[in-house]
Length: 470
Ligand code: ARG
Image (cartoon, rainbow, N blue to C red; front, side, top):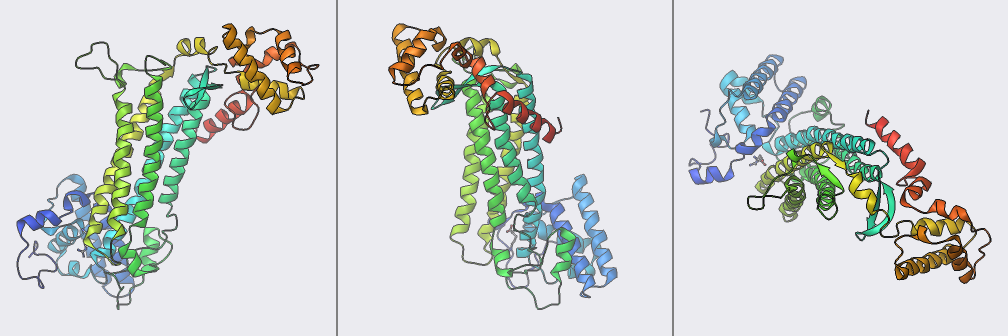
């Protein structure tokens, strides 16, 4: 009896072994056992409250479900593949343990609303988890910013030297991205518009029995009963939004990993990661490879794949539940596991990495990093920015022609002549021009909100420390 499927009365033959192995989901949806049991406890509580089962039956059901949860948690439970999925496995075990009352649990319920509920509960709790892990990564980045003190480094646009920045400001940039990812996960965890409980939708059309899903909604943290029983059982939109949040986090992780692969190359040598997070080559004895970073970058591709997989699974489905939807869990679990391990790995690597000032700072006089600062200095002397831009451009060209490595090798006369030569008023240009030159000076002069140095940076660092409890 126990491993006869609930629908066996209608289907005359036992399921073929091959078919059974093909349709089963218990091998991976057992992961939902806690959610499945929580949903069933709420359902039984509701059924008793509206008088569809007795209080005594409810208590036996809840007791039985809790014992199943304990046994699964302790590893003392055998999952029978012939029962297909976690919903049937738990129900069959309940009936075996408590008998007749167990046969009443599935009143006004289908696996279609049950699985939608289980998945929704799982998403809400795991979104909190991943949000926490992303915050750990943010903390590691802010700590790195603090460790980096006042290391000045070049920033890059188009991977060409741009303006000088504090190394810590780049840490805060990554921190900002990952913190937005955490916020996105927190919104998923809070429901983000998916506030109506799927349970109570039945198979597709609801039920003629007097159930009250507001009771189960309240018990399970939803704001209302189902808005549309058809939509609730047919849609995986909440899973897709979580997958999108995971994909965004994976994209940021990949981008950060790529940055650090570049920074750890011999050509850059801007960062040094502890040896325990690098690997060697089987042939080239000198190698220190950033394999963990490369895998974080590469695995982003599988997360995108999972998002696109579920979008594609859903795109051709007629409305109502279709078994295709069972595949949702495979891709969602995989994407979640991938991002979870990548975030955890990333936080560990950040904690074991430092900027190498000795390699970065001697290169600061390359690439005329202070050119924009000089143009802004001229603006403070009343010169139009476009004119200032042209003046500095011609000074940079002149330095290059004369083999001068930096603008500070020019004399005060060179500056005033260039200004006058452009038809602008050079009377206010003086020796203070040199305060706008040199990467270290430039970084101190930043004033705009969110800038990569100066007072705005210090303020932002203090804010992050406070926000992340450091
Ligand atoms: N294992 C199924 C899934 O994950 C549960 C729902 C099955 N419903 C059905 N009518 N066959 O989607």
